[in-house]
Length: 297
Image 1 (cartoon, rainbow, N blue to C red):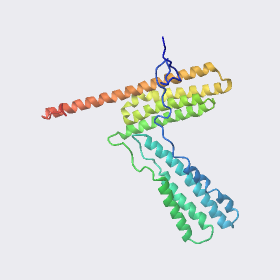
Image 2: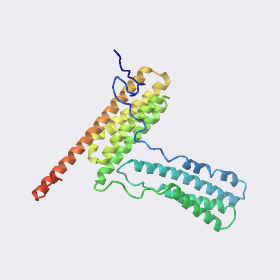
Image 3: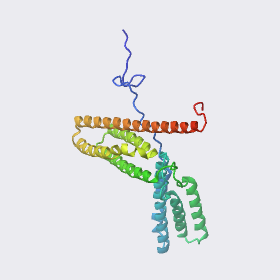
Image 4: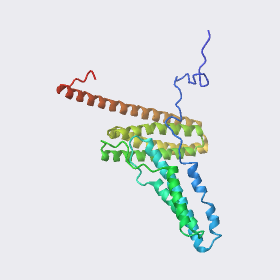
């Protein structure tokens, strides 16, 4: 009797042992804008370093000042873009404390003003180039977020507590990512990225409802710290010995952590839905007592 073929390379692309489609490693990820044009901002001003030492002392000082201001503007612009991407990735977020991109625009204008002024052409040309630089930088990279997002009706004290815990959790995930790079294994790097995505799903869930912090705090603190320590020790061992059994044990640990984090996040979401259902039922009862029919709505 004919038997249907299945496996990693079957048309369905599933493993017959678990029957599950592998998770998409790009799910929920966006291409970062902190590259390309931003990197050019670091490269374009560099010829000023050569030009500066071909001028008289006063012009040298203004040229080097312009170079420094332009490089500082490039750094602030990149940090501002990264902060904006973190802001956009969350449904509930505070605006960046420092408007880095706006400061980058101002410093770009100041840097161009200083660099052109060093050529001794008076004030008009430097002012024109400085103003154009400020305007074009603002149009190219936009402005920083200027208001909080999704904060209406949220206890700011509880949100601050969540922000601190999430910040610590992000530090643990970053340390895991840095540590696993020492192992020199691309597959393990992808597995750590997958676990980080699962952990961040929990972060976003708690951010949307800070009441979930109590139920999730152990996961976001103790368990992530343990995962970080285990990753550090494994990476150092595996980089030296390439021990296959240690690799198997570490992958099993990641699988267990990922399953438990996903299960806890699902539980938090179900609890939130139950709370919403209770609120709806209570509201309906109040409306019915006022003579308003709601069951047909």
